Length: 410
Image (cartoon, rainbow, N blue to C red; front, side, top):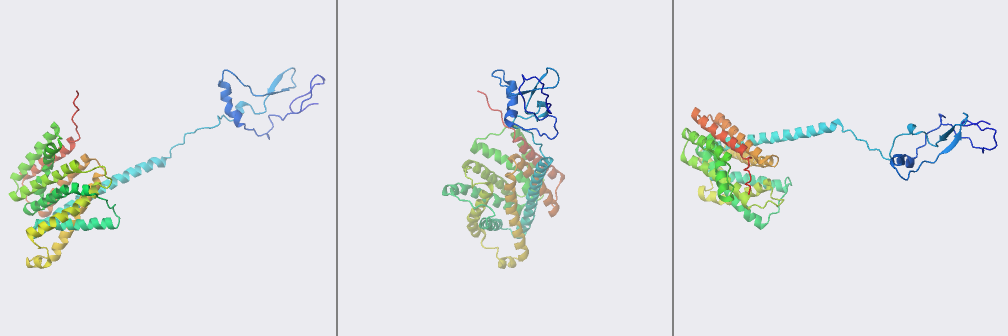
């Protein structure tokens, strides 16, 4: 009797075998044994204690040939697997595009902030100068700017546009000196703008790096490198040349701008010396908001004592001024004053101090050029040269500040 898989001979010495399913049967689906599949490589690689899979034997019709038969398909026909197969998932092309889009959005956002910073600064200087021309009371004007800023801060905290800080008594005591020098710095700037041209005030204020280096060495022990000292030479020389050829020069405006440099840089030095940086609530915007409120409280009684209450409609009308025009320009100047400082701190949170310093140098150039064009300020070639040298020195200073001195080896 012949089966589909083998032929039995007539010899009685062989036992009878049950017929096996042929391997070439097209209806036979290969059976997957996960335990055996995962152990094949281990069985082949192990040199000792080798365990061979169980095999059964069948006889072929060919004479005296034995062939092993496996209940599973041959190895070549089985899927190659080791239990778990790890495949690298290709990164979709849209991921790279998403990162590029995110980077592009951040760049556009930063560019927009820089543009707003410059724009608010230009409008502040123009409208502030127009008010100070017809209303030469810089203390009252400065108080008005702090008052508008105080209202904006309170609204910002009331409507949860920014987190309301929790300030301790020790922190308030540390902020008071900062508020004093901040108040004096803005007051001296307005005094200078009321006496000389906007371009000349900002040319003198280009000497801020000089005061920063001197005060840092005196109070913080941070001595400048040779590169920093070299960058101060064109700053001082350019300001001196511009001052000697300035058509609107007067000593009151000059020394007011110098005092503004001194107080503004004193604020920066004090902030490094006394502020507690570990407090989460003491970020730059919160600090500026608190200083604005303090400055208003500190300067309001001084304005009343020094200049009286002169910003009333009756007084402005008696002085022959357009009340609506003065109020409108004062309000715009105050809003721009607070806005450009807020945006400045927002930029500082996104870029390094060196980048912010370079942006501030470019901002000064933009303000000087725009004020000269708007007010048609007469500028001689030598005056322009001095201003250009001073601003080039400021730019050089902002670049060499990143060069740190090599540590001294013992």
